[in-house]
Length: 108
Image 1 (tube, rainbow, N blue to C red):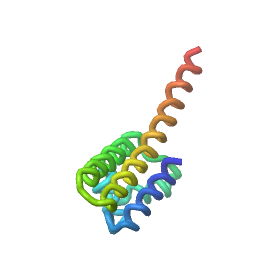
Image 2: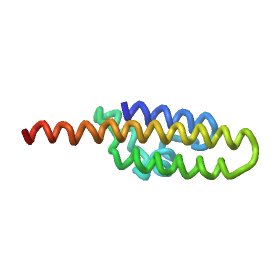
Image 3: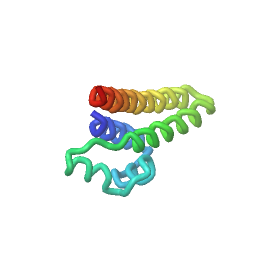
Image 4: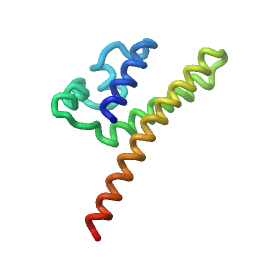
């Protein structure tokens, strides 16, 4: 799910002109190398929770920036960025719960 979430967020940011390329998205928004998403696809892996946390934080930063400006378009952008951040947080929460629950089962 998280890999698909990254693709969705990248597509949405690209459609509104915030990023131009996947390489830019990987380096500027995820804090990873320019081929990070491509590597995830090739290796059939999910992004790390750390990457999702960084992305969520950056989305919230821009949500606050847009929210502080006047105009309906800025307020709408703020809500959109906040919704994307919540999607990241939801995935982090679900995956984190899975980790500790599985470890708790193994300990029993």
